Image: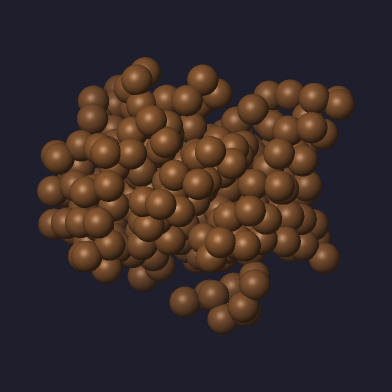
Length: 249
Ligand code: PXP
């Protein structure tokens, strides 16, 4: 464990290695290896590794998940669609955490998070099964009171707030979206739900999100994998940690 785990209230960094696998799969070669990337990220101070096993296996593969489960010494957060197939895989590997994400149009809210409210009946047994297996469940949702209310009713111990809209906006619209994120974080935390955030975060936009006091974990991938081309993945992770830590003050 890194020192970050020990500090109550500290902000953890989960590094998403999906797009290392995207580059590998573009050629069907054996490199670059996402497991190697995960080990480099861990050595550079990542608190956890996040990987999305998509139904179409477009980046991370079943074998990647098996190897990550075997080789990582920091927690693995498996991002998964709400399907029986993915539930069986999660129960087989028992990752530290599972984050339920939308993959199909009908599972999405208009903005892009999981429609936890609309999908309540489908999600309830899945959340229960993961919880029974002692896997920490999170739901990737929009910063929206209705979705948070559904997450609470579903018994999800964690929500991950979707920062994609925040990342795409600028100016006043971005400030308004930041306020939505901060309000949603406060509402979830007040109800005993741990708050994570992620999607589209970069050095340039991470600080205001890292400064939301209820946010306990950020999951960041695409930007770090791109930045790794220029400075190396370890250095990119260290710089992101620094940006998060200074924002946290
Ligand atoms: N959190 C969740 C739930 C995700 O699905 C993803 C990847 O899409 C991320 C965080 C990381 O997003 P990004 O790759 O844009 O940093």
